[in-house]
Amino acid sequence: MYDESSQESARRVQSGLAARRAPSAPSSSRMFASYLADIEQLLDEQRSDAALREAFDLPRIAIALADPHLRCSGDRVKTWCEEWLRPPGAERDAHGLEFERLGRTLTGRIGQLEDAEGVPMKALRRLQLRRHVRTLTRGFRVSRSRDLSAPETETVETCSALLEAARRWYARHACHDSTVQANLARLAVLR
Image 1: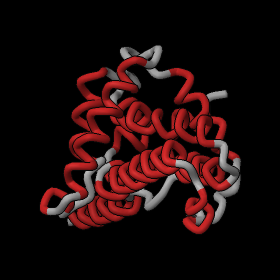
Image 2: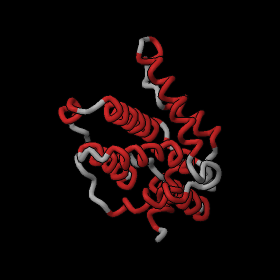
Image 3: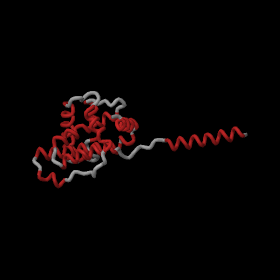
Image 4: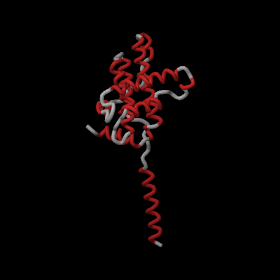
């Protein structure tokens, strides 16, 4: 009788410990949020070439984080752009065509980048360097974008679309994906 009750209480304690140890998906990553804020800050400072370079890395970073070996491929970039670039409901309006065009442009430009296949080390390294930075307030000031030329306006729109796609991807997928979270943690501890 003593053995049965002690075994039962041991099982209850173990199940309670297991429930408390169950990992919960974090709501955000400081490293990822800082990377996005940096792009917005570059736009705000009108450093469009740097902002565009960093924004073009977002799909490759997302794909690499979702892969156990941090690999990325052109096909997966195309798939990511098709899935995340267009906001929900955009296919029913004229903006849907803009997102299709932007997706094709991005896929072509990202495919031309070095390291398009394999591990995007430069992009991941830039992401990794953001791990100790305080998250800045989010948001590019639209009022500054009113006085821009046509190419600069296109750059702002491209960066904004990629930023919003990355935020949707993180909120709807990455914060619940154990591989993404493990890779973010791995990048946070690597020097």
